[in-house]
Length: 398
Image (tube, rainbow, N blue to C red; front, side, top):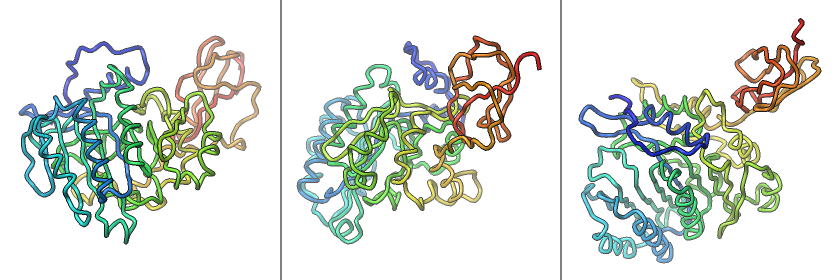
């Protein structure tokens, strides 16, 4: 298996997040010798909602499929319903299939998907899938239903609002309890052999939401915690009350790079104008870190492993999963470690004075670097070691 060379000729706008995606697309796209794409970057939406088993809930799920098929049905070539086989399909066949959603009884879990791939061993760019709770499981154990949508990442180039409007529609229609949307990796239906590669890519790109096992996350299938922050983080009012409600959350997230909008059942928090890949060389995406700092109290305190046990391959185990969940937990600079200084500077700012500058947040023991007046500090704002602030150690004559 090898990384696929990017041959798409679409002109990329001069937007840092989109240029980073285009630059790394080949590393994120894996092709088998026979030409099958088994890993690719996509836009991903995962939402958790109640009453998916009820007649009203089934109708709302059908509305979500209607919305998706109306806009992207021409790309749909595969389907699966319940325990049935994955099969080829066409958009015009959806009407009969839709009726099954509405007639399935409340004691049954609805499991269904449509996909752009006619074969299940290819990573699909377009996909909509749902797994509902049954009436017994929700009423007895508080288990929520889960819907997930997927679009090509290059949708951001054509019109970013296609994706944000999809998120808004699904959130409103399903009265979502919580969810997340942004960049992720698409894997085939039978994805076990690809998990080690997913793990490797997650170490390189912090902005990727690891969502392969989205249906099986026991803790966030309840209305108790969120999985974490993403480009778009959906917070229902029940969870939002833990932070003081909508007004309090808005006040805490009042920053230029962060947008907070209402939906029918809560808030959608947007971290930056575009989703960030979070490549290692670019540092942690600052808006994600800022949102995480506020929403962290809502995050799962005891998360499951992101992957199942794989003794012969490098993958997510419990310890590695816990570190991944906490990847945006950036501590504030420890003033006790900051040397006496006459000046300080922030990433991207103009250097005010020639000399040797130091930051404690790059590498374990900090980094020193000589800058001339008028240069600009590197743009990296956050790393796992903290927020990046540059301090002047000495002038140019020392």
